[in-house]
Image (cartoon, rainbow, N blue to C red; front, side, top):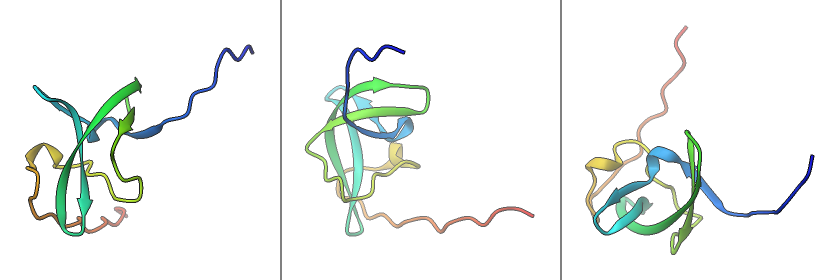
Length: 85
């Protein structure tokens, strides 16, 4: 194995990153409110995307239903589903 470089970055599920005419963005939960945060994307796989920008690493990133949100909308966390038996 030959290592040709080292790369650090923040990674989110691919479906968390949305795109429009302004560029790439995510929604983060601030209290009970969704906040749109502009990001730059880097390395992508079929399941994950590297992001950079002025997002708060301590706040949750919306992954499901994010395409229905608008900046400032009230949100609530979905209850965790229990596994089927």
